[in-house]
Amino acid sequence: MPDSFTFPRRHLLAAAFGSAAGLAHGKTEQPLTVAAFPLVDVIAKDLLKGWSARHPEVRTQVISRQYDDHHTAMTTALSTSGHLPDVIALETSYLGRFSLGTGLEDLSAPAFGAEQFRDRFVPFAIDTARNREGRIVAMPTDIGPGSLFYRHDLLAQAGLQERDLTASWESYVEAGAQLKARTGAYLIGDVRLLKDVIVRGGTPAGEGQFFDNQQRPQITSPRFVRAFELARKVRKLGLDARVEVWFNDWAEMLKRGRLATEISGGWMAGQMANWVAPGTAGKWRVAQLPENTFCSYGGTYYAIPRRSAPEKKQLAWQLIQELTLDRQRQLDAFRAQDAFPALLAAQEDPFFEQPVPFLGGQQARVLWREAARRIPVVKMHRQHKFADEVINAELDNVLEYGKPIPQALEDAQALLLHRANR
Image (cartoon, rainbow, N blue to C red; front, side, top):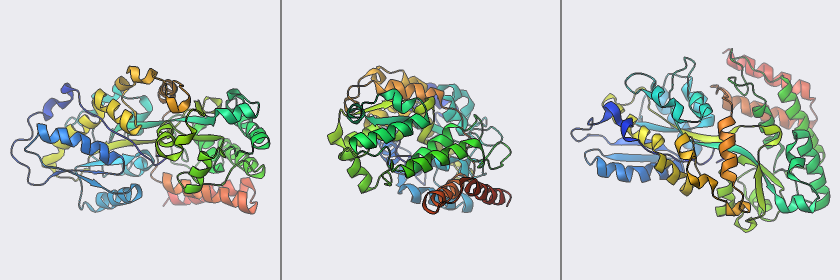
């Protein structure tokens, strides 16, 4: 569930059906299909159990693939118009690739009326789903408010407090040096996590992480310089364990108290509690990211392919409304799958005030709710994934081969400029 991980869905207020009510007369020859990835597929299947009872004349089907396979298959399907599902689940990091093309239906059009629902979601989530013309092409269901997870016990052992980690990114690194010296624990799994959040958090509102509003790459800007410099410092001080998230060595280090912090979405608490490191319950706390940086880690959207079967589009839209607009279903998905709801009404439930046992009884959901409402809109670009790969390759050149940071960023800038102008 990181920038590419797990998320949930929700349902419909009766009024949301609108003109879609009564559309499903007669049995559809082909099933209404939803293409999804884990754990989105679980939530979709749960919803469709009730859907089938209410719509016995409509056959339904969930087509599930692993995360990368799903998005690759959807890219192919949209470009060839072959084997198109009726509803597509899309993860945030892939949204730019799809929303800036012509493969998705315009949900702002009168036939769908998505604009009437825009104020029901946290602002950044719905605005992220707009194309260049400002039209909504996907509906948000869950988000991943970013936060800093830290080992409360290790911090106390090192004689440090939360503010030592959060005052600034520089103080975060300095605190990491003291943590390493006094406890032997690494500050973070890999410096890429630090680089990513500094770059993302410094993105001007309304622009892209790598490209500005004129589609020009911004890789030589001060936020990239700062991110690379701090990443290099962390590596030189030996503060990162050089382990990748979701791999076995990363999980083992979390279990053994060898990683003092983790930068991720709020859903990470459930992942650690349920299968990564349940034995560390009570030792973790969360805080807002250093410098009150607010950003999102993953999220899920639902869209309708523009060239999918016309006769099933209103049914598909009805289903998307059920997946995104129903408060109770959103809460059920949050409880079951740690899918933080994008729907504002769901965020007002008393469940958010309840203590989180894994986090020592902290009211962490309140903190994530505050973060969710302060996350700025970062526009997705169709070259987002490629740009991320280019930046990571240049960071490796800096860390492993001593390439000067200005040269690394200039080379990345040149490559992305060439790619963007193709």
